[in-house]
Image 1 (cartoon, helix red, strand yellow):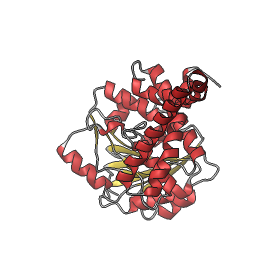
Image 2 (tube, rainbow, N blue to C red; image 1 turned 45 degrees about the horizontal axis):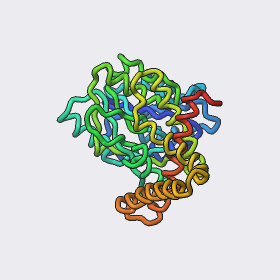
Image 3 (cartoon, one colour; image 1 turned 180 degrees about the horizontal axis):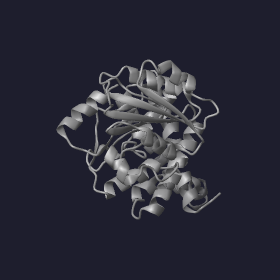
Image 4 (tube, rainbow, N blue to C red; image 1 turned 90 degrees about the vertical axis):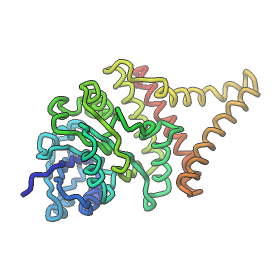
Length: 318
């Protein structure tokens, strides 16, 4: 059996249907020199039957371990990997057929130690999932791809590749969850490794199914940023405070009417115009009226959720 160049590590927790879709997309890759390591993180709804379905279609290994969170589960996968590069996907991603071909093309011309790629919605995702995908990547919110800068890029674990030597020096993830990928990316940068964004190496990312689930997810992102800031000084910047200010302003808005009714209406208008601006940008980008309208509640939930998690962890609130 050929030694794989890439080892794909997929941690999974109670999501067999999502894993099946991800594995199916990996079967369609035009570049085939990779293995898949599926790490079941103590799930009560296991994915072993999915593994058995794809065992004859992919070079794949399956491991079941006690629940410890995505960070340690990825580290577990790293230890089992045979490839020169380790590639991470979240279980709710679907990978376009050209993904590894795009990475190969990039690595031929540029020597990098780690990379990341964008995430996108897809037309067969629900309208809400498409809207959440847009707001997560939007310049006007918390910016999914973080401005899209192609150098000194901080890869995220939903779509991330690292050379084996990066793992050997960093020992992988040090957080079990909550911004574990951001923390690893910071250590990668501090060690002097070269990172980059590969724009063509994108994935389709489903996000969550409901706004409540989305709120919980982005709240954890906000919490994670504070945890990162405690470990790495200077890693909480002004832009990371924006969702917190958005939330605090929203809470203060009803009380402003007692100070000056004009202040209330000006503040409400600013919030309305801001959300409308996001929706207009979504309309131009997606060409879908339905998706653009859903970006309004999506962006609203994203910002208040992130701000809530950020402030809650900042002040150690229960």
